[in-house]
Image (cartoon, rainbow, N blue to C red; front, side, top):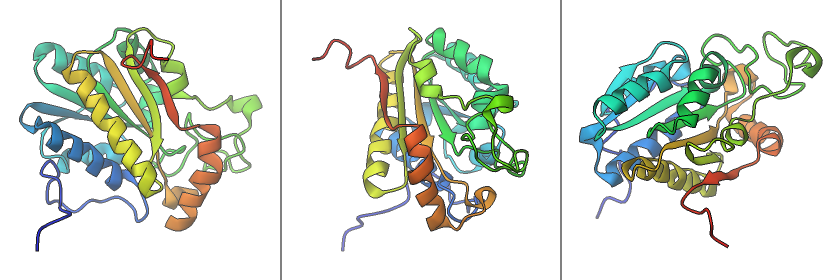
Length: 250
């Protein structure tokens, strides 16, 4: 009997620490599958951010570098410019990328740095206990917004793909999710394309993945998927916000 499903080679045998129902593990697998299929593990360098993904360097088989909080794009820029032939990606959460790392994100994108960014958006600070994040929804209850996010005092959530899609240096800005088999397939395709863009030298590519955080949302895993579908997707519509390979097509 032939093997029809197996662990990607670019994933290590280390058990993952993520909470039950968290979709980080699915996203890790999709990144690893893209690395395997493109045959670039030997020249791939990942940049781990600060957050729930801080230990991702234990799970990817390629070389990994730990970045200070919010500085993953700056570290990735240095790695890519030092050895342009390497394939460099960052793996970042919403607090790392869209709060303390906003400046690095925007300027790496507008410079068109030839890197791949995997942005995991679960609308909350996961590792530090469930505080409001830049992507927390209006009215969302968190540890620091017990009565719900009030946009009058906390402002509105940041829609990262929409914001970055206006910048000339961006080759791909796409939002996906991993709540179903169909959406997982779409997410894999987007992640692989983001790596292909880098290999072809097209510039900065970001794939935003809407993710769950059952622990800090206070929901069971199945309920967390329903909350994502009913609340996050309407506020953060899935789709391609910029794709330079499609520009000019009718």
